Image (cartoon, rainbow, N blue to C red; front, side):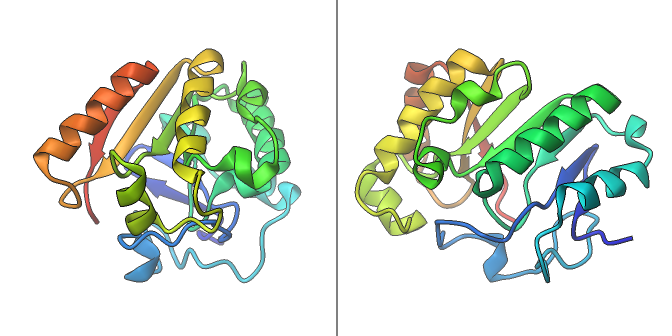
Amino acid sequence: MDNSILYEVHNGIYVNLTNRCPCACVFCLRNTTDKVGRSDRLWLTKEPSVEEIKAEFACRDIAKYEEVVFCGFGEPTERLSDLLEIAAFVKKTYGKPIRINTNGLGDLVNGRSIAPEFAGLIDVVSISLNTPSEARYMEQVRPRFGAGSYQALLSFAKQCTEYVPKVVLTTVATTLTKEEEQECAEIAKQIGASYRIRPFE
């Protein structure tokens, strides 16, 4: 079985849709490892088709997992239509909660507001806020869209709160000061999202 497509982390089954990403974060796991959780190499030799991903699900006992998470070695909204098709399949076939881990730049990637397309399909959107300021964001995340990326992220997060039951903004432990983490927590509160400090791995 090709664990680079589906892989386990804790009690979830993760979907590695793509290695494409518009960011080059200084702390990205891709800089130091080629695997996460119980996976083989997450660098894809080719992007799996929707049918190949469905076939991978059929090979697993999905009942034992708490959730299905779209998160791999790339930004899942780079393949938005495929993501939504697979999410609909998962909901219909397995009835599992669905989470997307994203850098929050899906609107820029797709050239439109994508949050409305999550309604009734996505249960949790976890967005990598990473920093409390645009200047620090540009230093740490280095998005290819340049200036305006940080505001696009915040706008996307706010929109998600209208269509998704739970929205979480995250930062990485050890990359910010305690004061900056407090600032991030306040940003999340203002947006109507939760805040989580995820471990540096």
